[in-house]
Length: 142
Image (tube, rainbow, N blue to C red; front, top):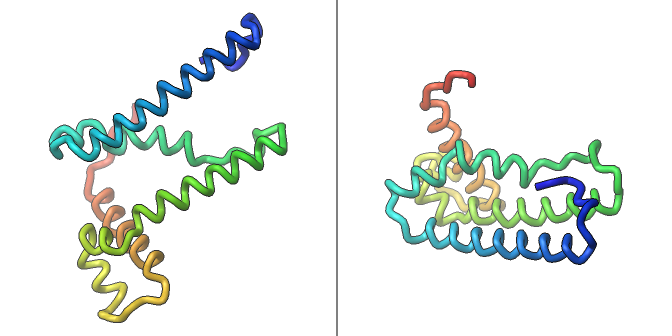
């Protein structure tokens, strides 16, 4: 993807951008379907830290100092915050957190109902995932 398509007319650029957008949206829908339907062995080869990490890095990093257009920077910041909030809601869905990290949820709630269950659930999932990540031997630098 070229940053500057100055050799192309506005119409050609627009058609190109629409095509990229449509292909990407279809691909994301396909990925969601695969995440729902594929067996775990197959999902583990597709949805893992090495494949999802770079995507998450590019999607969720706000580079305010690199943005020259303030209104575009603000729109990007707001979009990232909305997407992050939605993803955190999914990750911190309390019933899911109990399924993913029952031991940590039990410790964090101590049998009491929590006034901020989403934050507790998010902490539990993060702590459980963090301990699992630490158990994986470090990769050799490339």
